[in-house]
Length: 509
Image (cartoon, rainbow, N blue to C red; front, side, top):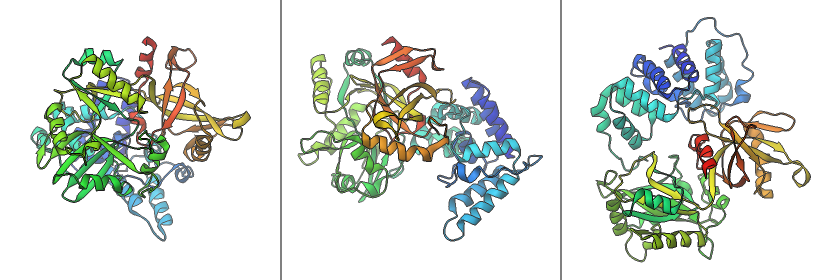
């Protein structure tokens, strides 16, 4: 298959806002792809190189302005070979070898292919092929149930592999996928609840109400003495969290897959500043000055038994048995099962009094629907918060002169387009945060106007707001009210930011 066919499909996807049309264009391409081409094609149309970090950015690619090829000749296989060489070349002389690879790749590219490759290599390929759209396309291309595709993806966490399995083995191969201890699954997510009373009315009395911590999501796998830890984005952090490894290794089991959150507590048992504990997730080195405490709220596997499809009540019973006893009881997320309204309100009050965000209300009959943000889990927080993409920042004035301070905030376009700007803020920023922004933002700049920087959409920030109001100033027709920065979210990707529809929903509240 020629790269030009992938580029043409990408252009088709970008040209329509119809989810059905996007999926149809991708499905048609996947049907035409060879067995060895399905994985890279799926990765590329999802905006991923499929090779991890390549060490290639705007500065490396900008000088490559030679004459484009007149006719398409680049194949998918040739591009895979080039990207693999970029990903694996290191050591003395690697700069020259990498430059030669890029020169060969771009000299063979047409003008359209050149633009596509630059966008792909710099993470700027946003043609609207979101994960859900690609999963629909895989199901259509392989003529298999979408539920089978989504479950296999949940268990593998790898979209290209799921596509290859669907197209080569069909429904039987997809349904044969199983949870593997040591391979992370995509986490189940909670949707926003309007209020505690609203969540209880929606889900009924057969629920559990648990603390919503101001922490970071973790998934921990144990197989014998081997313990590994991943973040919500399935990035492994085992080497940086030895205290979590030691705690899980002490549990009375041989194998387990636990879901939970972790945070650092001060001497009074209250959560430390988010940036203190998130420093532990930025590198593989442990910070002995910040100890993390885990709080587990789900159990997906125990001693050879998979629990994903069991209702939450069964999983919680197994978790309670695993964490029984004084030594392990503190590892359990605080909460109450089947509370009456008064008990549920006390759980929320206790969570807030302890410095936490709120509560999560969960249906006890729900299986573990990994990777989905549905009604079965609803988070209730008294303050509206949004995870938004940082689009740019302005140079400050007065006390903030010389600092990049006023950040531009964008909500995710659910159709895969550019983030939609919904406001600006410098509220809530400490001197330390201003210094970090001023040092970090220039490295992420795609333009540098006199007033500040425009950024590649890579950073997610959590913003507290009092609500939203209609606006003719911003393209989404809505603007945030009294937005202030709570913290940056290195544990989240822009694909996990809140959508413009979530922001618009605040108009009604």
